[in-house]
Image (cartoon, rainbow, N blue to C red; front, side, top):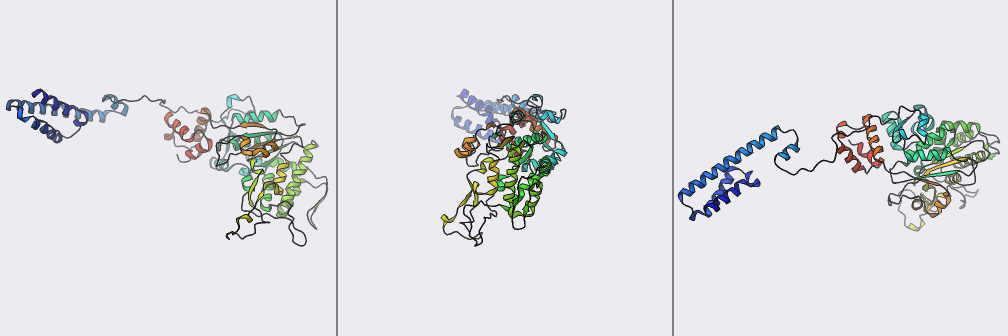
Length: 478
Protein backbone atom coordinates (compact mmCIF):
# COMPACT_ATOMS: atom_id res chain seq x y z
CA UNK A 1 0.00 0.00 0.00
CA UNK A 2 2.92 2.35 0.64
CA UNK A 3 4.14 1.84 -2.89
CA UNK A 4 0.74 2.81 -4.20
CA UNK A 5 0.65 5.95 -2.04
CA UNK A 6 4.12 7.06 -3.15
CA UNK A 7 3.25 6.50 -6.81
CA UNK A 8 0.02 8.50 -6.50
CA UNK A 9 1.84 11.33 -4.72
CA UNK A 10 4.66 11.51 -7.26
CA UNK A 11 2.18 11.47 -10.17
CA UNK A 12 0.27 14.32 -8.55
CA UNK A 13 3.35 16.45 -7.89
CA UNK A 14 5.30 15.86 -11.10
CA UNK A 15 2.49 16.30 -13.63
CA UNK A 16 3.11 19.56 -15.60
CA UNK A 17 -0.35 20.95 -15.09
CA UNK A 18 -0.39 20.19 -11.35
CA UNK A 19 3.19 21.41 -10.82
CA UNK A 20 2.11 24.94 -11.70
CA UNK A 21 -0.43 25.08 -8.87
CA UNK A 22 0.17 26.77 -5.59
CA UNK A 23 1.68 24.86 -2.68
CA UNK A 24 -1.54 25.06 -0.68
CA UNK A 25 -3.48 23.42 -3.49
CA UNK A 26 -0.91 20.65 -3.75
CA UNK A 27 -1.13 20.13 0.01
CA UNK A 28 -4.90 19.70 -0.24
CA UNK A 29 -4.52 17.17 -3.06
CA UNK A 30 -1.90 15.24 -1.13
CA UNK A 31 -4.13 15.21 1.96
CA UNK A 32 -6.97 13.72 -0.02
CA UNK A 33 -4.68 11.02 -1.37
CA UNK A 34 -3.33 10.28 2.08
CA UNK A 35 -6.78 10.15 3.71
CA UNK A 36 -7.92 7.67 1.09
CA UNK A 37 -5.32 5.17 2.22
CA UNK A 38 -4.98 6.23 5.90
CA UNK A 39 -6.52 3.06 7.20
CA UNK A 40 -3.66 0.96 5.89
CA UNK A 41 -0.72 3.31 6.64
CA UNK A 42 1.15 3.15 10.00
CA UNK A 43 2.54 6.18 11.89
CA UNK A 44 6.12 5.52 10.72
CA UNK A 45 5.00 5.28 7.17
CA UNK A 46 3.05 8.51 7.61
CA UNK A 47 6.22 10.39 8.60
CA UNK A 48 7.99 8.97 5.59
CA UNK A 49 5.09 10.01 3.41
CA UNK A 50 5.17 13.60 4.68
CA UNK A 51 8.96 13.80 4.22
CA UNK A 52 8.59 12.56 0.64
CA UNK A 53 5.86 15.11 0.03
CA UNK A 54 7.96 17.99 1.34
CA UNK A 55 10.94 16.86 -0.72
CA UNK A 56 8.79 16.89 -3.84
CA UNK A 57 7.47 20.39 -3.06
CA UNK A 58 11.01 21.76 -2.62
CA UNK A 59 12.11 20.19 -5.89
CA UNK A 60 9.18 21.76 -7.74
CA UNK A 61 9.92 25.21 -6.26
CA UNK A 62 13.51 24.96 -7.49
CA UNK A 63 12.27 24.08 -10.96
CA UNK A 64 9.87 27.04 -10.97
CA UNK A 65 12.61 29.45 -9.89
CA UNK A 66 14.88 28.13 -12.60
CA UNK A 67 12.13 28.52 -15.22
CA UNK A 68 11.43 32.11 -14.23
CA UNK A 69 15.13 32.94 -14.37
CA UNK A 70 15.46 31.43 -17.86
CA UNK A 71 12.42 33.30 -19.13
CA UNK A 72 13.80 36.60 -17.90
CA UNK A 73 17.22 36.03 -19.46
CA UNK A 74 16.11 34.48 -22.76
CA UNK A 75 15.89 36.91 -25.70
CA UNK A 76 13.58 34.98 -28.01
CA UNK A 77 10.55 32.81 -27.48
CA UNK A 78 12.02 30.02 -29.62
CA UNK A 79 14.73 29.36 -27.00
CA UNK A 80 12.09 29.19 -24.28
CA UNK A 81 10.16 26.59 -26.26
CA UNK A 82 13.32 24.54 -26.79
CA UNK A 83 14.21 24.79 -23.10
CA UNK A 84 10.97 23.26 -21.95
CA UNK A 85 10.67 20.71 -24.75
CA UNK A 86 7.74 22.38 -26.53
CA UNK A 87 7.29 21.45 -30.17
CA UNK A 88 8.40 24.35 -32.41
CA UNK A 89 7.62 24.31 -36.14
CA UNK A 90 10.50 25.57 -38.29
CA UNK A 91 9.89 28.96 -39.98
CA UNK A 92 9.56 29.01 -43.75
CA UNK A 93 10.59 32.66 -43.97
CA UNK A 94 13.97 34.29 -44.12
CA UNK A 95 15.01 36.68 -41.40
CA UNK A 96 15.08 39.75 -43.66
CA UNK A 97 12.62 40.99 -46.29
CA UNK A 98 15.35 41.25 -48.97
CA UNK A 99 13.42 43.83 -51.02
CA UNK A 100 15.14 45.25 -54.11
CA UNK A 101 17.19 48.36 -53.40
CA UNK A 102 16.39 50.02 -56.73
CA UNK A 103 12.75 49.61 -57.83
CA UNK A 104 13.18 52.51 -60.27
CA UNK A 105 14.84 52.18 -63.67
CA UNK A 106 16.63 55.51 -63.36
CA UNK A 107 19.74 54.25 -65.16
CA UNK A 108 17.99 54.01 -68.54
CA UNK A 109 16.69 56.49 -71.07
CA UNK A 110 12.98 57.04 -71.55
CA UNK A 111 13.09 55.35 -74.96
CA UNK A 112 14.22 52.10 -73.33
CA UNK A 113 10.97 51.95 -71.35
CA UNK A 114 9.11 51.24 -74.59
CA UNK A 115 11.47 48.53 -75.88
CA UNK A 116 10.08 45.01 -76.08
CA UNK A 117 13.56 43.60 -75.45
CA UNK A 118 14.21 45.64 -72.29
CA UNK A 119 14.17 42.56 -70.08
CA UNK A 120 16.66 44.06 -67.63
CA UNK A 121 14.16 46.76 -66.61
CA UNK A 122 11.09 44.53 -66.66
CA UNK A 123 8.91 44.84 -63.51
CA UNK A 124 10.62 48.11 -62.56
CA UNK A 125 9.13 51.60 -62.40
CA UNK A 126 9.97 54.46 -64.68
CA UNK A 127 9.15 58.08 -63.94
CA UNK A 128 7.14 59.98 -66.51
CA UNK A 129 8.98 63.27 -67.03
CA UNK A 130 7.10 66.19 -65.53
CA UNK A 131 6.93 67.90 -68.90
CA UNK A 132 5.37 64.77 -70.45
CA UNK A 133 2.94 64.46 -67.54
CA UNK A 134 1.64 67.96 -68.23
CA UNK A 135 1.60 67.59 -72.02
CA UNK A 136 0.37 64.03 -72.51
CA UNK A 137 -1.82 63.45 -69.46
CA UNK A 138 -3.29 66.91 -68.93
CA UNK A 139 -1.51 67.28 -65.59
CA UNK A 140 -3.65 64.48 -64.13
CA UNK A 141 -6.86 65.00 -66.13
CA UNK A 142 -6.37 61.86 -68.25
CA UNK A 143 -5.17 59.39 -65.61
CA UNK A 144 -7.09 57.18 -63.21
CA UNK A 145 -8.11 58.52 -59.81
CA UNK A 146 -5.55 56.32 -58.05
CA UNK A 147 -2.70 57.41 -60.34
CA UNK A 148 -3.72 61.06 -60.04
CA UNK A 149 -3.70 60.75 -56.25
CA UNK A 150 -0.24 59.12 -56.31
CA UNK A 151 1.13 61.77 -58.64
CA UNK A 152 -0.13 64.47 -56.31
CA UNK A 153 1.22 62.82 -53.15
CA UNK A 154 4.58 61.72 -54.59
CA UNK A 155 4.89 64.80 -56.82
CA UNK A 156 5.59 62.54 -59.81
CA UNK A 157 3.91 59.89 -61.95
CA UNK A 158 5.60 56.49 -62.04
CA UNK A 159 4.44 53.53 -64.12
CA UNK A 160 5.55 49.94 -63.82
CA UNK A 161 7.08 48.37 -66.92
CA UNK A 162 4.98 45.22 -67.26
CA UNK A 163 5.03 42.49 -69.86
CA UNK A 164 1.47 43.16 -71.23
CA UNK A 165 2.43 46.79 -71.92
CA UNK A 166 5.64 45.84 -73.70
CA UNK A 167 3.79 43.21 -75.73
CA UNK A 168 1.23 45.79 -76.89
CA UNK A 169 4.00 48.28 -77.70
CA UNK A 170 5.68 45.59 -79.79
CA UNK A 171 2.49 45.09 -81.82
CA UNK A 172 1.93 48.83 -82.28
CA UNK A 173 5.51 49.41 -83.42
CA UNK A 174 5.14 46.76 -86.14
CA UNK A 175 1.62 47.64 -87.29
CA UNK A 176 0.83 48.12 -90.97
CA UNK A 177 -0.91 51.49 -91.17
CA UNK A 178 -2.18 50.78 -94.70
CA UNK A 179 -4.53 48.17 -93.26
CA UNK A 180 -7.65 48.75 -91.13
CA UNK A 181 -6.81 49.81 -87.58
CA UNK A 182 -5.17 47.16 -85.44
CA UNK A 183 -7.13 46.62 -82.23
CA UNK A 184 -5.53 45.55 -78.96
CA UNK A 185 -7.75 44.61 -76.04
CA UNK A 186 -6.53 44.36 -72.45
CA UNK A 187 -8.54 42.09 -70.17
CA UNK A 188 -8.05 40.69 -66.69
CA UNK A 189 -9.35 40.70 -63.15
CA UNK A 190 -10.68 43.83 -61.52
CA UNK A 191 -7.81 45.96 -60.27
CA UNK A 192 -5.08 44.03 -62.10
CA UNK A 193 -3.60 47.15 -63.75
CA UNK A 194 -5.31 47.44 -67.16
CA UNK A 195 -5.68 51.21 -66.90
CA UNK A 196 -2.00 51.59 -65.99
CA UNK A 197 -1.10 49.62 -69.13
CA UNK A 198 -3.28 51.96 -71.18
CA UNK A 199 -1.43 54.93 -69.70
CA UNK A 200 1.88 53.33 -70.66
CA UNK A 201 0.60 52.90 -74.23
CA UNK A 202 -0.73 56.46 -74.30
CA UNK A 203 2.69 57.77 -73.30
CA UNK A 204 4.29 55.68 -76.02
CA UNK A 205 1.81 56.84 -78.69
CA UNK A 206 2.40 60.50 -77.83
CA UNK A 207 6.16 60.08 -78.14
CA UNK A 208 5.67 58.41 -81.55
CA UNK A 209 3.77 61.42 -82.97
CA UNK A 210 0.34 59.82 -83.00
CA UNK A 211 -2.78 61.93 -82.78
CA UNK A 212 -4.07 60.49 -79.52
CA UNK A 213 -7.83 60.39 -78.92
CA UNK A 214 -8.44 59.55 -75.23
CA UNK A 215 -11.79 58.01 -74.31
CA UNK A 216 -10.90 57.16 -70.73
CA UNK A 217 -13.91 58.31 -68.69
CA UNK A 218 -16.87 56.41 -70.10
CA UNK A 219 -18.22 55.70 -66.62
CA UNK A 220 -18.75 59.42 -66.13
CA UNK A 221 -19.86 59.99 -69.73
CA UNK A 222 -22.68 57.45 -69.38
CA UNK A 223 -23.61 58.31 -65.80
CA UNK A 224 -27.29 57.77 -65.06
CA UNK A 225 -28.33 61.22 -63.86
CA UNK A 226 -27.55 63.75 -66.59
CA UNK A 227 -29.26 66.00 -69.07
CA UNK A 228 -30.05 64.47 -72.46
CA UNK A 229 -31.61 66.62 -75.18
CA UNK A 230 -33.47 65.55 -78.32
CA UNK A 231 -34.18 67.68 -81.36
CA UNK A 232 -37.75 68.79 -81.99
CA UNK A 233 -39.59 70.52 -84.83
CA UNK A 234 -41.25 73.93 -84.82
CA UNK A 235 -44.38 72.51 -83.17
CA UNK A 236 -42.34 71.05 -80.32
CA UNK A 237 -42.69 67.44 -81.41
CA UNK A 238 -39.65 65.34 -80.51
CA UNK A 239 -38.07 63.28 -83.24
CA UNK A 240 -38.13 59.74 -81.84
CA UNK A 241 -35.45 58.64 -84.31
CA UNK A 242 -33.00 61.41 -83.45
CA UNK A 243 -29.87 60.89 -81.40
CA UNK A 244 -29.66 62.23 -77.88
CA UNK A 245 -27.26 65.08 -77.10
CA UNK A 246 -25.24 65.26 -73.88
CA UNK A 247 -24.20 68.91 -73.47
CA UNK A 248 -22.11 68.62 -70.31
CA UNK A 249 -20.44 65.30 -71.12
CA UNK A 250 -19.57 66.37 -74.66
CA UNK A 251 -17.87 69.53 -73.38
CA UNK A 252 -15.96 67.47 -70.82
CA UNK A 253 -14.69 65.07 -73.47
CA UNK A 254 -13.61 67.89 -75.79
CA UNK A 255 -11.71 69.42 -72.86
CA UNK A 256 -9.97 66.08 -72.30
CA UNK A 257 -9.12 65.88 -76.01
CA UNK A 258 -7.51 69.32 -75.92
CA UNK A 259 -5.63 68.45 -72.73
CA UNK A 260 -3.25 66.32 -74.84
CA UNK A 261 -0.84 68.94 -76.18
CA UNK A 262 0.27 67.01 -79.33
CA UNK A 263 -3.39 66.40 -80.23
CA UNK A 264 -4.20 70.06 -79.73
CA UNK A 265 -1.32 70.99 -82.03
CA UNK A 266 -2.60 68.60 -84.67
CA UNK A 267 -6.15 69.99 -84.43
CA UNK A 268 -4.79 73.50 -84.92
CA UNK A 269 -3.30 72.41 -88.28
CA UNK A 270 -6.03 70.10 -89.58
CA UNK A 271 -8.95 71.70 -91.47
CA UNK A 272 -12.43 70.71 -92.62
CA UNK A 273 -13.36 70.10 -96.25
CA UNK A 274 -16.93 71.37 -96.11
CA UNK A 275 -19.18 73.92 -94.48
CA UNK A 276 -21.14 73.09 -91.32
CA UNK A 277 -24.28 74.94 -90.27
CA UNK A 278 -25.08 74.75 -86.57
CA UNK A 279 -27.82 77.35 -86.33
CA UNK A 280 -29.28 80.43 -87.95
CA UNK A 281 -26.18 82.57 -87.38
CA UNK A 282 -23.73 79.80 -86.49
CA UNK A 283 -21.72 78.53 -89.44
CA UNK A 284 -18.27 76.92 -89.74
CA UNK A 285 -16.87 77.66 -93.18
CA UNK A 286 -14.90 75.29 -95.36
CA UNK A 287 -11.27 75.23 -94.27
CA UNK A 288 -11.96 75.89 -90.58
CA UNK A 289 -9.50 74.24 -88.21
CA UNK A 290 -10.69 71.44 -85.99
CA UNK A 291 -9.39 73.38 -83.00
CA UNK A 292 -11.79 76.22 -83.80
CA UNK A 293 -14.65 73.70 -83.87
CA UNK A 294 -13.65 72.41 -80.43
CA UNK A 295 -13.47 75.93 -79.02
CA UNK A 296 -16.87 76.70 -80.50
CA UNK A 297 -18.31 73.55 -78.87
CA UNK A 298 -17.11 74.69 -75.45
CA UNK A 299 -19.00 77.96 -75.99
CA UNK A 300 -22.15 76.22 -77.28
CA UNK A 301 -22.74 73.15 -75.07
CA UNK A 302 -26.05 72.35 -76.77
CA UNK A 303 -24.14 71.81 -80.03
CA UNK A 304 -21.19 70.04 -78.40
CA UNK A 305 -22.29 66.44 -79.08
CA UNK A 306 -22.80 67.08 -82.80
CA UNK A 307 -19.55 69.03 -83.07
CA UNK A 308 -17.67 66.22 -81.33
CA UNK A 309 -19.08 63.74 -83.87
CA UNK A 310 -18.01 66.04 -86.73
CA UNK A 311 -14.47 66.34 -85.33
CA UNK A 312 -14.23 62.53 -85.17
CA UNK A 313 -15.49 62.23 -88.77
CA UNK A 314 -12.90 64.75 -89.96
CA UNK A 315 -10.08 62.96 -88.14
CA UNK A 316 -11.08 59.66 -89.75
CA UNK A 317 -11.16 61.32 -93.19
CA UNK A 318 -7.71 62.83 -92.69
CA UNK A 319 -6.36 59.50 -91.46
CA UNK A 320 -7.64 57.79 -94.61
CA UNK A 321 -5.85 60.43 -96.66
CA UNK A 322 -2.61 59.69 -94.82
CA UNK A 323 -2.33 63.16 -93.31
CA UNK A 324 -2.13 61.91 -89.75
CA UNK A 325 -1.85 58.63 -87.86
CA UNK A 326 -4.31 58.12 -85.02
CA UNK A 327 -4.15 56.22 -81.73
CA UNK A 328 -7.47 55.67 -79.94
CA UNK A 329 -7.25 54.89 -76.21
CA UNK A 330 -10.51 53.48 -74.78
CA UNK A 331 -10.96 52.41 -71.17
CA UNK A 332 -13.90 50.10 -70.35
CA UNK A 333 -14.96 49.79 -73.98
CA UNK A 334 -17.88 47.51 -73.07
CA UNK A 335 -19.82 50.61 -71.95
CA UNK A 336 -20.23 51.67 -75.59
CA UNK A 337 -22.57 48.74 -76.16
CA UNK A 338 -25.87 47.63 -74.71
CA UNK A 339 -28.14 49.61 -72.39
CA UNK A 340 -26.91 52.70 -70.60
CA UNK A 341 -28.12 53.72 -67.12
CA UNK A 342 -29.57 56.95 -68.57
CA UNK A 343 -33.36 57.26 -68.43
CA UNK A 344 -35.09 58.11 -71.70
CA UNK A 345 -36.55 61.62 -71.24
CA UNK A 346 -38.93 61.04 -74.14
CA UNK A 347 -40.78 58.41 -72.11
CA UNK A 348 -39.91 59.14 -68.50
CA UNK A 349 -40.72 62.75 -67.53
CA UNK A 350 -41.35 62.53 -63.78
CA UNK A 351 -39.60 65.15 -61.62
CA UNK A 352 -36.65 63.89 -59.62
CA UNK A 353 -37.74 62.32 -56.33
CA UNK A 354 -41.37 61.79 -57.32
CA UNK A 355 -42.68 58.25 -57.00
CA UNK A 356 -43.27 56.34 -60.21
CA UNK A 357 -46.65 54.64 -60.33
CA UNK A 358 -46.11 52.65 -63.53
CA UNK A 359 -42.72 51.01 -63.73
CA UNK A 360 -43.33 50.10 -67.37
CA UNK A 361 -43.02 53.78 -68.27
CA UNK A 362 -39.31 53.70 -67.36
CA UNK A 363 -37.01 53.08 -70.30
CA UNK A 364 -33.25 53.36 -70.41
CA UNK A 365 -31.49 54.62 -73.49
CA UNK A 366 -29.35 52.33 -75.58
CA UNK A 367 -25.77 53.42 -75.98
CA UNK A 368 -26.16 53.80 -79.76
CA UNK A 369 -29.03 56.26 -79.22
CA UNK A 370 -26.54 58.88 -78.01
CA UNK A 371 -24.75 61.11 -80.52
CA UNK A 372 -21.48 61.14 -78.61
CA UNK A 373 -21.37 57.34 -78.27
CA UNK A 374 -22.06 56.91 -81.99
CA UNK A 375 -19.04 59.10 -82.71
CA UNK A 376 -16.89 56.96 -80.41
CA UNK A 377 -18.06 53.76 -82.05
CA UNK A 378 -17.03 55.06 -85.49
CA UNK A 379 -13.44 54.92 -84.25
CA UNK A 380 -13.89 51.18 -83.63
CA UNK A 381 -15.05 50.46 -87.19
CA UNK A 382 -12.97 48.70 -89.81
CA UNK A 383 -13.63 51.21 -92.63
CA UNK A 384 -10.65 53.48 -92.01
CA UNK A 385 -6.88 53.08 -91.86
CA UNK A 386 -3.70 54.68 -90.60
CA UNK A 387 -4.55 54.12 -86.95
CA UNK A 388 -4.54 51.79 -83.96
CA UNK A 389 -7.15 51.15 -81.26
CA UNK A 390 -5.99 50.21 -77.76
CA UNK A 391 -8.84 49.38 -75.40
CA UNK A 392 -9.62 47.56 -72.17
CA UNK A 393 -12.62 45.75 -70.75
CA UNK A 394 -13.63 45.61 -67.12
CA UNK A 395 -15.42 42.66 -65.56
CA UNK A 396 -18.75 43.20 -63.86
CA UNK A 397 -18.81 43.58 -60.08
CA UNK A 398 -21.54 40.93 -60.02
CA UNK A 399 -19.45 38.46 -62.05
CA UNK A 400 -15.82 39.26 -61.19
CA UNK A 401 -14.55 35.88 -62.41
CA UNK A 402 -15.83 36.38 -65.98
CA UNK A 403 -12.75 38.13 -67.32
CA UNK A 404 -12.63 36.94 -70.94
CA UNK A 405 -13.57 39.49 -73.64
CA UNK A 406 -16.40 37.28 -74.91
CA UNK A 407 -18.09 37.01 -71.51
CA UNK A 408 -17.75 40.74 -70.77
CA UNK A 409 -18.66 42.19 -74.17
CA UNK A 410 -21.41 39.84 -75.25
CA UNK A 411 -21.77 38.37 -78.70
CA UNK A 412 -22.81 41.57 -80.54
CA UNK A 413 -20.05 43.78 -79.15
CA UNK A 414 -17.53 40.97 -79.53
CA UNK A 415 -18.35 40.62 -83.25
CA UNK A 416 -18.29 44.41 -83.66
CA UNK A 417 -14.72 44.64 -82.34
CA UNK A 418 -13.39 41.59 -84.18
CA UNK A 419 -10.64 41.12 -85.17
CA UNK A 420 -8.54 42.19 -82.20
CA UNK A 421 -5.50 41.02 -80.24
CA UNK A 422 -6.42 40.02 -76.66
CA UNK A 423 -3.77 40.58 -74.00
CA UNK A 424 -4.42 39.40 -70.45
CA UNK A 425 -3.18 41.59 -67.61
CA UNK A 426 -2.64 39.24 -64.64
CA UNK A 427 -2.09 40.06 -61.01
CA UNK A 428 1.45 40.83 -59.87
CA UNK A 429 4.00 38.08 -59.94
CA UNK A 430 6.62 37.79 -57.19
CA UNK A 431 9.06 40.28 -58.72
CA UNK A 432 6.37 42.86 -59.47
CA UNK A 433 4.98 42.60 -55.95
CA UNK A 434 8.37 43.13 -54.36
CA UNK A 435 9.16 46.08 -56.62
CA UNK A 436 5.80 47.66 -55.82
CA UNK A 437 6.40 47.34 -52.07
CA UNK A 438 9.96 48.65 -52.49
CA UNK A 439 8.58 51.63 -54.42
CA UNK A 440 6.15 52.41 -51.58
CA UNK A 441 9.04 52.07 -49.15
CA UNK A 442 11.23 54.52 -51.04
CA UNK A 443 8.38 57.01 -51.26
CA UNK A 444 7.85 56.78 -47.47
CA UNK A 445 4.35 55.42 -48.12
CA UNK A 446 5.01 52.39 -45.89
CA UNK A 447 6.47 52.32 -42.40
CA UNK A 448 9.72 50.38 -42.42
CA UNK A 449 8.80 48.19 -39.46
CA UNK A 450 5.87 46.76 -41.45
CA UNK A 451 8.11 45.30 -44.19
CA UNK A 452 11.22 44.29 -42.28
CA UNK A 453 10.82 40.52 -42.57
CA UNK A 454 9.97 38.11 -45.33
CA UNK A 455 6.97 36.97 -43.31
CA UNK A 456 5.45 40.46 -43.49
CA UNK A 457 5.95 40.52 -47.26
CA UNK A 458 4.20 37.16 -47.54
CA UNK A 459 1.34 38.45 -45.42
CA UNK A 460 0.87 41.40 -47.78
CA UNK A 461 0.96 38.98 -50.70
CA UNK A 462 -1.67 36.76 -49.08
CA UNK A 463 -4.00 39.58 -48.03
CA UNK A 464 -3.91 41.28 -51.43
CA UNK A 465 -3.73 38.11 -53.53
CA UNK A 466 -1.06 40.11 -55.41
CA UNK A 467 -3.80 42.30 -56.85
CA UNK A 468 -2.41 45.82 -57.47
CA UNK A 469 -5.57 47.66 -56.41
CA UNK A 470 -5.98 45.61 -53.20
CA UNK A 471 -2.31 45.97 -52.38
CA UNK A 472 -2.63 49.74 -52.74
CA UNK A 473 -5.66 49.83 -50.42
CA UNK A 474 -3.87 47.72 -47.77
CA UNK A 475 -0.66 49.73 -47.93
CA UNK A 476 -2.61 52.95 -47.43
CA UNK A 477 -3.30 51.75 -43.86
CA UNK A 478 0.28 50.71 -42.95
